[in-house]
Amino acid sequence: MTGRDMGGFKILAGNSNRSLTEAIAAYLKTPMTKCQVRRFADMEIFVEIQENVRGADAFIIQSTSFPANDHMMELLIMSDALRRASARRITAVVPYFGYARQDRKPGPRTPISAKLVANLITRAGVDRVLTVDLHAGQIQGFFDIPVDNLFSAPAMVTDIKQRLDLKNTMVVSPDVGGVVRARALAKRIDAPLAIVDKRRERAGESEVMNIIGDVQGKSCILVDDIVDSGGTLCNAAEALLEKGAKEVFAYITHGVLSGGAVARISASKLKELVLTDTIEPTAAVRVARNIRVISVAPLLGEAINRTFKEESVSSLFD
Image (cartoon, rainbow, N blue to C red; front, side, top):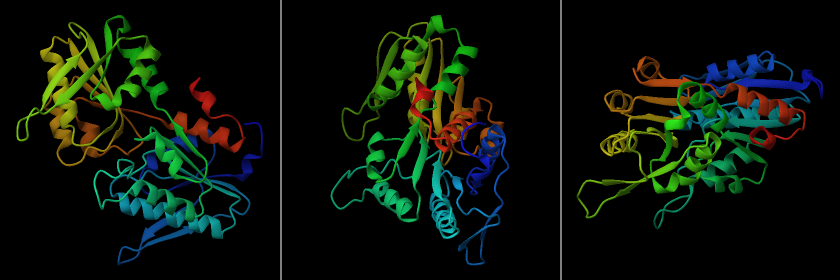
């Protein structure tokens, strides 16, 4: 690689997604920095950086996924360890930013936890944040340090073009709030857009799913940033098929998949759920009949390389 000396470049892995860190290090053709992140008997987290990082450009790869609080503390303590070891600059690469759904006050006397987390990360000594598909774009404004919000769309578009007939494809937003994200993907593959409008007429009644758009005979692609319980996704797929859709795929960035989500999706009418590896896939995800994982390691690796060389990151998406 050209630019600044790669000797000053350090990649460190927390425990949340080591396989992704290994893939990023392989893309960058640089070894991972030796770092021990372990627990004491009472589950306190201990970090030891086992290489010299003085004056280095350090990148911590750590999603704050389940268990979110443990992985968040690992990130904070690793940042503190690097700062005290005189790293020149610390970048937190947080592929999945936990607490992002708590970005506003939904009612009185409730927190804005995403802002608190932003404060914690900044005070721990982090100089820059790299993340993927933030649930709410305004979270970038919660930080007083630079935040690069990368998009998984290029990886998804490549996969869609390889596997689907784009002449008969329609992109679908699973709710009104996700229209901007779905429209952006539809534009990239030159496909029409439909919207699932969920509404509950009266309290206690089940949700009614109305489809805005003609999906008759189409291969539909549901697009969203997070799949958690999987209920909305499965119900949307069923509603689309009832309206005449030929088949339904889902492309989701972050596979939170809590509780019985994997079993629910496996038993659903979804032909395939495609996730990225921002959250490390569980054993259940890896063996599920209709769930597949694509990697964002090249995307993150290139963003890290450009950050290190002080080049444009936004041009990745032009």
